[in-house]
Length: 496
Image (cartoon, rainbow, N blue to C red; front, side, top):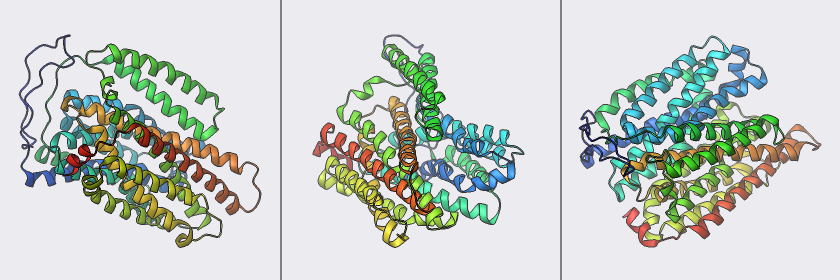
């Protein structure tokens, strides 16, 4: 890409109703190969900041509760306020980048994320902290789709793009692990406030680096789909809220049921609007490709089975193995290292075997690792009960996420890369939220009438939750096996 400071020429043609887009401004000239490495570093650092924030606050929650006087119920909204706005706005954030320019959108998201982190770190009461966390979610929803779309449009199809996707695909798991470790260190050595304030210098550095190393994408003029944006955002927000309520109050919670009903109505109307819009927030033609449609289903189910399991691994480590928050964060490092190493090798595996065999192997390993965790006993230590499953899950995730990202984004037109990325990450985030709700419900059912020591009860419930997570992953495996065509040639072209 050229130096990001280069502003594309503005298009003077007025929008028409005869085509989904007017002729866009001239695209930026691709950057020389030597510069693509720096471009990738800046992009993945922005995404890593969001990934770290997904867990860095978790280990600080007891200190936040003590410092700001949160009730137990109110404390959960330190996480939920972020979840609600981030999950609800991802789809819209992707489309904003398509229309206004992805670097511009990413820079705005980074600055908003840094500002809200500053406000949260300086918050004098609980209300200000919750408002800051909600604002962080808005910033994250602008960052995440723009980073993935920028990789799609910045790196030429072939080996460079897929190496970039391999690094990007490892960032979610790495960010979560780094967040647990960093949160434990900052909380133990300084204050819970630094779990938020650490984002400020990183965000400012990124805002300065983006114009220098990342070129702006072409802006596509035309009418913004306001009805689609409103109904889509309201519908996904209602759905995320409903699942948050389920994880707290169970499936009979009246507010959860109202949230599901509202989501069903809003999302049905959203699909109707999108089918008729000239420039939809979600182009329904993205589902016309069988492989992409199957990839979207799998990217929903894989986090549903995995991310909820991580929650119970953290509980087991801290409450049964008596790990400190910092040690519990380090316990995930084998998974992180294996996942990162595996992802870097996946392009070679795709070249040799094709996309579908690699993806089926990855999902099988992830399901096997989670199923192994279902055999946990209270007397199991880290080496005997957790290390083996963590390695298997790391292998499985490393062989799954990058091929899924590549399958979904394959052959997406540049003007729809943001929408495709936003939907991918909306489904991934929603899958994690749905999975946690399902696994928490399974855990509650298993422990409701359980007897024995607290360690025994927790381990029994966690084992049932792990079994449910393995089942969800197996459903994703079934979808992949039956829907994806497994075109070997496509897999070779993607990795050569």
